[in-house]
Length: 209
Image (cartoon, one colour):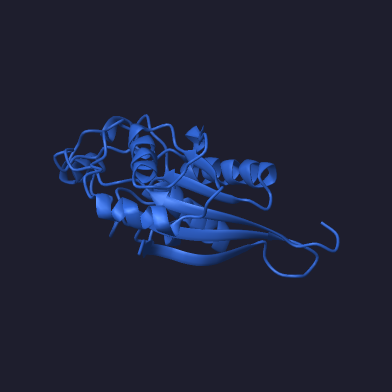
């Protein structure tokens, strides 16, 4: 744009914790979230901007998290569902424990994630695939809501993908981010005449206060 700077602020919230999965990989499985910690939702209700555009993934746990923030006192307008913000699809590995997945992988280890960034589970997708669809969704929504606050209730995988976009990270490095349940991550898209990258990072994995 000429002569004007437009800032679009993305407020990413990882969904409330899933506590009844028995230590098994749930990924794209539509498991419910535990929204019993009202104080944390009240903190989010205070911290998030009024009048924002609200997005959730297609999965139940993000809808329940948004509902709990609204119930804690934050006025949420009609929200849109964005399936491209869903968690990574682990395909045939859904329902397995991490130990069982390790055996399925034939010894292909990873320090802090289920699988290396370029590896797709059988019938599933890799983290690189996640990055591609999340990046496309961010591009669409940033263009549609330029200059707005956008609150996206999503997943650890999709938030790491957003940070990879903002920082132009190698996919494997992006997996190193720790994203806690109900934490806030903020990235801003800055569109204007000055030189520099389009994205800046304002916060990563902050607890609401």
